Length: 613
Image 1 (cartoon, rainbow, N blue to C red):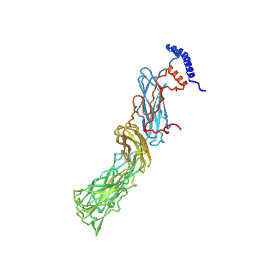
Image 2 (image 1 turned 60 degrees about the horizontal axis):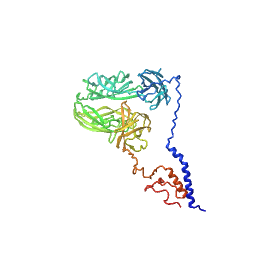
Image 3 (image 1 turned 90 degrees about the horizontal axis):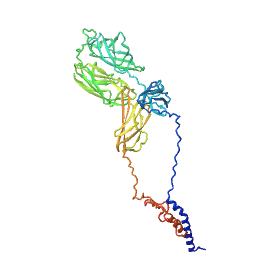
Image 4 (image 1 turned 90 degrees about the vertical axis):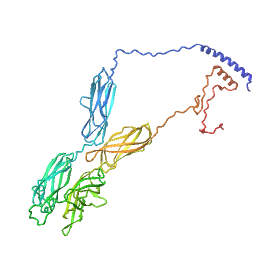
């Protein structure tokens, strides 16, 4: 049976009075404040008999350079300056060094333990021996620890192996030459003096000069050979040889003598240079060797190359270039029907004993290292008047098998004079052939986007595209309008197809296009310093702006719902809710609503809205 409403009311009233009686002591306690007891930790007194540990003075450490290099077998030294920052206490420090690659670095003698006076400084030398078997480009990391009591500081050092310096090669050239008589006559002896000068940077050893006068000049006494033990860099040597003029000089106004110079450098490599020496001849007075008439002495043309140049500054194997020569007629007669023959070996043709200006052969010319392009090695000039000059040009290409070095190119001028005499003037010019490294600098992976005012990484890679090993120096990375760090490193030796990577850090100042400049130092085949410069283009994006989320209103609503905090519930309110619960009228607190999270309109619920079925 259901209990009556009257019974429920009476039961509630009795419970109400019972709770009121029980709550009376609590009301009385509210009027008095309970004192708070403070607990204090008891610290035992310090033991005055135990002495305090000594306080080590502060110190600072500085190093002259954090990275150095040396050749195999050498000792690289670093200077570390240890400064005592205290004004009253002396500093006692110990110095220890450890190596990653096991190169056994150590402080210099008696510097593993140092004492520094107050406010003073002491220099500690760290010696790093480079192994004799180390390869160029290899490096070692050394960690130097300076300890004083509980204080310790470390210094990181990097030692790199560099390639030994290659001694410079000697380079002999004819400085001047002369004869003891004014002119060379048929059947007479004369002495030729040739002055050789070493224009290279190394000493020339076992210098031997071999003279060859052909059918016009016959060497006497020494068989045409002159020699010396060596010529220092910048030094000179005079080679002398006595010749006898042949009978054909009676009708020839100009003759040439070839001088082949053979020598070697300090490493034993041998070199051979050939020079052509031109001598003026004269008919012998009262000669009975020939009955034919002779031309008037001194009445002849003389073609000389006064200057020459190439349109390519540095010739390399496989490089096509254009050779331009300025030719002057320094004689006292006209040169008729002049033809230039590259490579020498020229000969004129004759018909019935009469020279033919148009018949010139140059097929026996020496063109091993420099070959003509687009035309033959014959260049026709025409007539060249006395005292006049002309410019000749020829397209050539360097042979791909030519090694770097100094090469001579023989040039012959074939012409006739006003007496219809066929004349050949031979000369030699010098060309230098280089073999420069062929490098490519680019990113070895996608660097991603570059942001302004943010640190970014430049994953750079240097690749050797050439066919021989390239020995490179330092690689430096810079950029205008940006701060670049970790941007200098020694590359070392790169095999064909080999590569070297460097991860540099860059912080651009502003957005926009930017060029990364990469400069690599090296030494060419003639021991001259050179650089390889390349640019890499990047686009810098503007920085990302971070904005805090905005609040909707002032009540703490952020768009994801609102939670209201009600006031604390009193005792009578709790009793009233209890009675309502007994009467079945509901016991929820109307002053404290249940938090409801509102769902934004742009977010769909995970389940269908509505009551559960």
